[in-house]
Image (tube, rainbow, N blue to C red; front, side, top):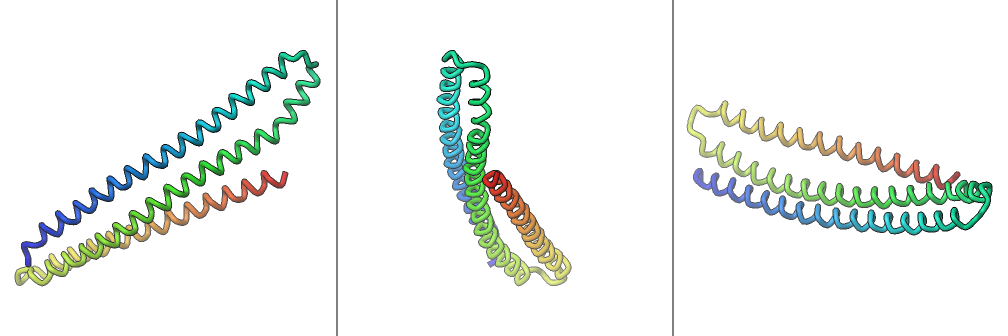
Length: 174
């Protein structure tokens, strides 16, 4: 039973590699979404720039051009807000998916690590109780550190989402 530990570690590493590749594929998917969003924004900006130049060269008076430009401020702000909202949505999707992968992977690894620790404790030679206690403490501390990091990350994400929501609400009200 003691010799199964290397196999357990190899199994954990194989699972970690699979998760890494899954995350890489997910990352590419989100980069594609971001590229589409940026292309849409670039196309819209190009079309609007063409209209602005057409208007500028149409022989209108400077006052008419100024009034037209002033009238475009609110639609431009709304477009920027919309772009930011879409960008924030993509970022939230990335965060949620990665957090789910990390939590699932951590739960699996933690369960396997606990099995390894228990096997190690059962098969440890006499007199190694201190080493077993230190090993168990290290595993427990790593779990607590991960949990604290996860909670801090969730708090930061919630604050960012609240800030984005309040910015959206204040822009729409005006």
